[in-house]
Length: 124
Image (tube, rainbow, N blue to C red; front, side, top):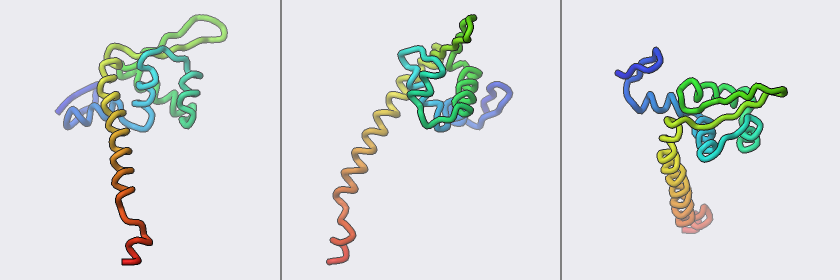
């Protein structure tokens, strides 16, 4: 049993998925890998995420200590997001996941190309 921020997890994988799981968190971390981005810049690189969901995911990543938010005291307000050291420590894992996805897609395509078509199976 692992306790983290008043939650209990059965194993470390459950905790990890709670921290970076979901559709957008890993992508947000990936885009912040080597640069600091403003909210509007994140919206541009993640066009399919709703503003509400992006805000929610950023808050969760910030609360988890993976992303830091810097607010400039100016008008209009300017907010920038970047990775913390803990967030940066995830980059090798995200890179491996990215490579795995590319390899899997390529292997899947090769397998699909070798499968007989519907017409070929019906003519036998």
